[in-house]
Amino acid sequence: MRWQELSTPIGGLGIAVDGTGICRVQFGGAPPTRTPAADPLFDDAADQLGRYFSGALTEFDLPLSVNEGSAFERAVWRAIAAIPYAQMRTYGQIAADVGEPDAARAVGTACNHNPLPVVVPCHRVVGAGGKLVGFGGGLPRKRFLLELEARVRIERDFA
Image (cartoon, rainbow, N blue to C red; front, side):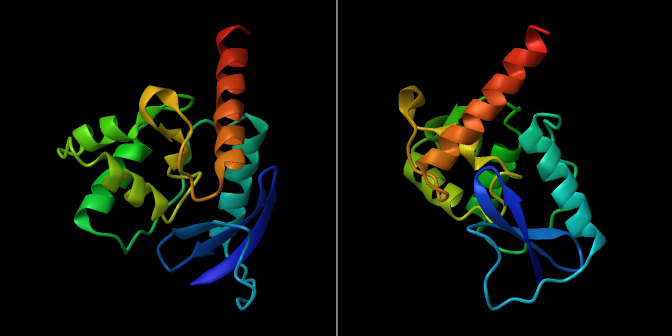
């Protein structure tokens, strides 16, 4: 695994790649023990994340490499990846989507274990009634991402 750090409006994001694709996005930047490495995947990730944060990109098209997680977690991550830009789903809705309607708390745990936050948009998963709860990057980052997407959607719908 090779790492680079990307500066974003929500702070540093550590981006890791393996031989297949982007395998980890980490809030707070790249691990200090890692040596930055050059790779065209980093350039592509930096470009797409930059366009996302500027409001010019609403859907990522990056090769992803996820080699971890239980079958349930992977199902949750796929369901999260399918949430359209600027929309939200509740933990309970995701639980029902993956065939485990009583597993809302387990969905929250799976969201917390998401190895690719922002790219696999776990920030779009909220508590019942739209309440902002639980986010590995902290609620201020979750709020920022949701507000960014809402603003871009409004600007596009009313332009």
